[in-house]
Image (cartoon, rainbow, N blue to C red):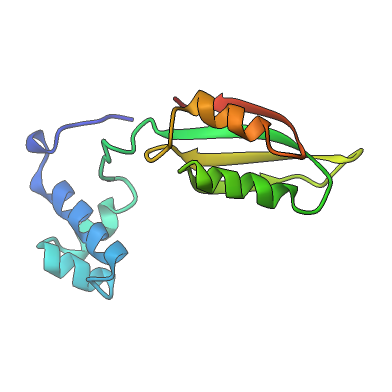
Length: 141
């Protein structure tokens, strides 16, 4: 994988990214519309759409993966998610395993752009939530 400044690339790549943004925002109703609006051929759009992506400098490196062990009791996962919301985390994914011996493993991916405090503060606050038996950061920041 490479990160390349767009000034050194053929213009078609920038236009494909622009077309993808038009589609994602709903400004373009179809790939054909997006290609036309951004000034790229449909064939070029389809050729490069799955290989060219915009780099979001603000969000880069701000995704954290957490693993938690929760007590198998109603409301514990909800309390965890509520605390993440309260602390400013943007929850991207939640995967909860089936409880075994009274506890369940939960993996969460969060975006930390708007955290109130740093990641260590967040983890410490989550460890205080009733029913969370363990909380660890496994990836990110």
